[in-house]
Length: 77
Image 1 (cartoon, rainbow, N blue to C red):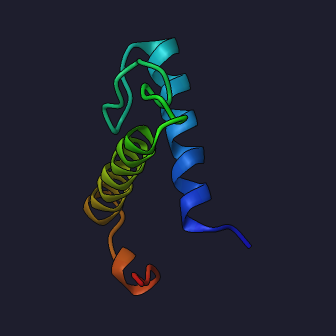
Image 2 (cartoon, rainbow, N blue to C red):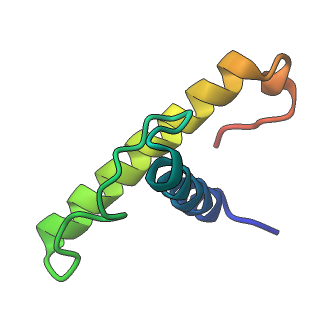
């Protein structure tokens, strides 16, 4: 069983790899560090969570755009 949050991290790592190797990726993830914020502070954690939430929404938008019928097998909580 895979948590949706874990899948978002996996996509982020894959997209970073593609971007670093080829200069661009399908989701247009910038080629900076995975989490360019200080996770030792509460503000940094909130910033990281915001970045991951935005990526999650971009992934869903990408899936719904390019995978016909995705709404039949993706359930949102």
